[in-house]
Image 1 (cartoon, rainbow, N blue to C red):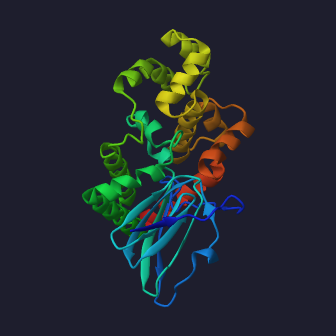
Image 2: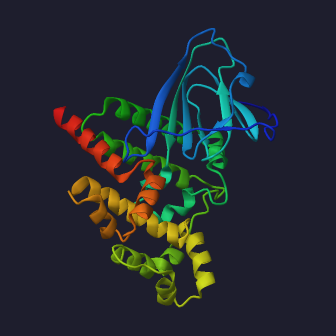
Length: 310
């Protein structure tokens, strides 16, 4: 893996890339890029771009040149690299050789459920971009190989879409996060101690039990006996999201489930998750899913119809 000084990008406007998910419930896009011999290109011929999703790159054959705002690296077969969300980058084929690699873009925040929510903070990038985890792959070749293999498994499952592939992909994603969490010797992920999570348990239960009704910061504060300002800072530090964002996240996840499993109208689903203002419901849903509730339901119905034919 080579490293050189990075060019200045302050005067260059990076392009924001909108990631279209291949499955609306997995919140990811994964595909293969294949360069034939003689397709050697200069890095300057490729535009800077970024996207909100975290990106993993796994090289299968050849060498890939990758430039971020901090450095330029060349990675080869078996190498894996992480690019944090909204981090400007660009890549190219530096040699006249075949180049084949997998690009895996994912919104990791959407892969936390009630049991794993305490670890949301670790991957939220509130203080540090996930790029800083690349040291794990440089220092631990065994972990790099495992993550590389898991990315290849996700690609194979996504491409084949055999029954149950969503379960296989979800399991592989969680295994990648577990490997990063347990091998982060520098504590880049800022793991939150269990004692702090237990302290918030009454608030988390209060939120879960009242999603269809009114959930207030004031009530949450009273459950812990904390002042308003201390509570909102404490909640965000422990959970990796503000109190309001966390409540909205839980409500939209419940709405997604109802859109798939019930025939309730969209308006009724809004009421069921405590958002009676339809304009607000549509706005929040689109923020998390890049589509309207109706589009989401149609996509999932089409997906189920395809699976039934297999």
